[in-house]
Length: 159
Image 1: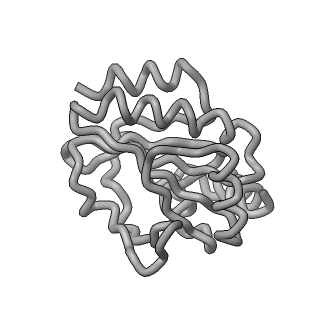
Image 2: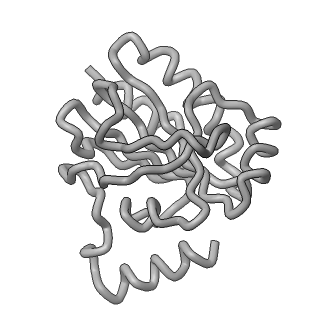
Image 3: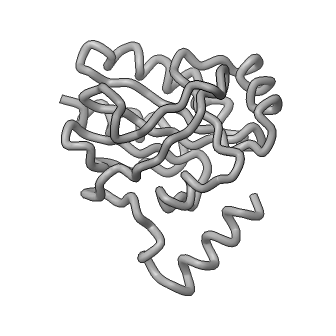
């Protein structure tokens, strides 16, 4: 929470130059470990999927509880169109993230970023926030918060 407040303050001072992953931006070159097996690393530009949604969440985020089920359904329904969801927990302790997922399961891959550097590279300002990456490996949609409206907008962008 403190990290997001500092990021918001920096964005107010320096403008949008810190928001690297706006619509039209290339996906940041980030490599993060799987939450379930930290020896396996995932590099974002190398993800083999036509579309993928990068969803930032944390155990302390109230609406993240609801988002896990909704994003799981979205992943399943759009999967045949070459779509997948990749979650990124920003929890400092992987055990806390795993406990959260045991209560609020998700059917998509989960990564862990205890340093929060991926949030900085994406320009995250709100939790949860999802970034839709298109076939050209560029951001085609940014969806702050979690809502049915965001899910419908994602459905329309995935062709």
